[in-house]
Structure formats: structure tokens, C-alpha cells
Length: 463
Ligand SMILES: Nc1ncnc2c1ncn2[C@@H]1O[C@H](COP(=O)(O)OP(=O)(O)OP(=O)(O)O)[C@@H](O)[C@H]1O
Image (cartoon, rainbow, N blue to C red; front, top):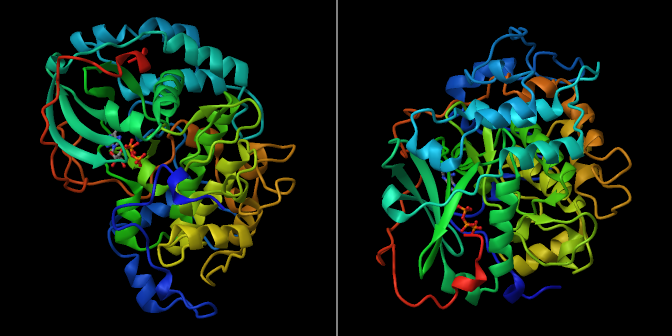
């Protein structure tokens, strides 16, 4: 049993959806259903468009087939079929992108992945060729973006974390909005997170995928580290989930499917994410997910031992300090799906991490009766301590998860191209630095851009 001192993160904010509403065995009440009304309901009619081939065995509303050339991002269609090499040529250096008028659209972020996963197979699962994906990633991300504070106008805090905060910023060169994560070096060192922080930068630099945040570059001054990312305008899935209390089955399925594709990609390039939770899932302006916060991501071809993560989401092999592998992300996916469907995490226990650990090790999950049987079947196969039985960790890898009955109507290739409408479109004014969907935070009082002696500079050579 780990002591709290080992842990990087305790779940903060208003933390946990309370399980108090759930009385095992009691049916879902009409009142429960009403709770779904806000803020998902205005677009709930769109749930029927998520997955155009409805599963005959599911209770989803039957769906009109979305037109095959429909692309709600306005970006995806022209990408399909581009070669990774062609795409590489189109992506200018980061410095040029900030300075120049031809800043790439989000669509270009997607195209290396699209090219790497493009195939003519009959199956609707993207056939990801890991070495090709990794190569495409490397080719696209060889630029080494270096910025300075005067490149940006810093505005409000979008979110805070264990070591720093994330600001909305505007580039003075192209007037576009970005998010800059600011980490205090002293705090990173004090909390023994130097390696994780360097890993975060390296992993983000390497990754390129439609559902992963894009890192454009970094810099440092004598006190802080800075990471420039896309500003993802729709806020955290966490906020949407708390407001909605819990998601209807198809809504949870949509988000779970996008996360599954992102995990499939990360694992294909030997990266474990290790911090899956709704706080780290942001919604873009069209309602698609972006995974942020790679503070725990690690390149591991095989097994690792570090104890990190957020209590509710830790797999038993992590809690009991055994070596672990990519399977921990599949466990966390199970916890995420459970939380989306139930509104609380399965091992939650009066907010006490130690009790949560005990519950994780006991491994008993009570499924609320309103969870769809197919979802429950998938959850029982993900939230299983036995690594020889955990879905995602078996011979079929992530394909076993993607081919599970709960995901039967998901057309994975279209989903990977963002060619399926999201269930909820955040009410934001795109491209205008609209941060209205983010919680408000007290602002930093110490000015950025400190000069003078840099005690820790050598520890962060890549920033
Ligand atoms: N690219 C982004 N666009 C918009 N908001 C963002 C972005 N990246 C992060 N945020 C916001 O900032 C919050 C904190 O970011 P992040 O999780 O990366 O910080 P952290 O210090 O690593 O936090 P933690 O303690 O959870 O690890 C996020 O939950 C999110 O609300």
C-alpha cells in the first residue's frame, strides 16, 4: 500500500461526483433522466448521428446515416490520402508558423496520423502500422520551437495543476490564441518531477494525433518552464460531466471511442499515458476530444515500476507497486467509462485516497442498474486485476477493446478522421480566445520572465 507521499496528484477541484444518488438495485428515476438535460440536451438529438451503423442489439436510437463526405471539422476531408512525406513538406518550422501568415490548420495536425493509418482493408478498424506511425511522427515534429515571453501576450489562467498553471495567450506575431503551461522549476525539483517534466516535453514533441494536444514549442527563464500548445476552447470533459451528472450511453461511448483511438496510437509508439481522467480531456470547438497533460507519459517498450497517477484511476498493479505496462491505461479507460456512465468512480470512498487504494485492491465493482449490459461487460473486462484477462492487454491488444460489443456501431476509420459528429458542441466563439468555458482561478502574482541566477537550468536542457 503506497503512502500518500509517493503520489504526485490528489484529485483536486470539486473532485468527485458523489455516488450518494446511486442506491444499488434501485432503478433510474425520471428525475435522474432530467439531470441529463443540461448541458448535453440541446444537442442530444445528435446522439443518433454518432455512429452511423447502429448496433441491432443496443438500445441506441436508430440513426440516419451521416453522409460519407460530411466533415464537421471542415479540415479532415482534404487530408485523407495525403502522404506523410507530402505533409511534412507542408509544415513550416514553428518559428515560421508563428511569424508567417500561413499557419497550419488543425487539419494538418491530423494528416500524419491519417496517412500513417490510411489503408484499404475491409475492416473498419484503423490498421496502425506502428513503425510507420512513429516515422511519420518524427518527420513532422523535427522542428524545435523556441519562443520567448515577448512573443506572447499572457492572459487569464485556464487551469492549474500540481506544479504550475496553464494560461491563455495570444501570439504577437500571428494574433492566434494558444495555451501556455508554466511550470515552476523549484516546485518541479522539490516534488522530484524533473524526469517526468522532461518526459512530458519529449513525449508531446513526438506525438501527433487528432485526439492528442499539439505542442508547438517551449522556453525557459530562470524560474519557470513554458510549453506552448494549441488552445482547446471547449473546456474540460470534467466540467461537462459534472454539469450533466452522468452521460447517456451513446455520449459516453463517443468519448470513450476517441480516447481508445488515442491510446491505441500512443501504445503503438510505445508510450504509456498513465493519467487518464476527465480533467485531462479537453473538448475542441467542435466537441472532439484532445488529451492534454503528458506529465506522466512514458516511453516503455515493456515494464515500468514508477508509482504515479491519480488515486481513483490507479490500476491495482500500480497501487501494489508491481511492475506494470500499457495495461494500466486500459484499466483507466474502464474507470473513465464507468465515471462517464455513473457520474462517480467505482472505487470512490469518501474522498480518502487510502480507502480508494483498499477498494482498488479488493477489486469489487458495484454496477448501477442503468449501465447498459454491453458497457458493463466491457467494464468488467477492463477493470480486472488479472492482467492475463484484462482487455487491451491480451493477444489482440487494443483491437480487442475496439471490437467489443459495446463499440459495435463505431466506424473507427471515420471517427479517426473526425468524420462523426460530436454529441455536444461547446458554445464558444472559435478563434477569438473565448475562455468562458473554463473555471476561473486566482492569478499568479509573481511576474514571468525572471532573469538572474538559474539554479536549475541544467536540469531542463530541452526547454
Ligand atoms: N491546451 C490547453 N488548452 C486549454 N486548456 C488547457 C490546455 N492544457 C491544459 N489546460 C487546462 O489547464 C489544466 C491544467 O493543465 P495540466 O493538467 O496540463 O497541468 P498539470 O500541472 O500537469 O496538472 P495536473 O496536476 O493535473 O497534472 C487542464 O486541466 C485544463 O483545464
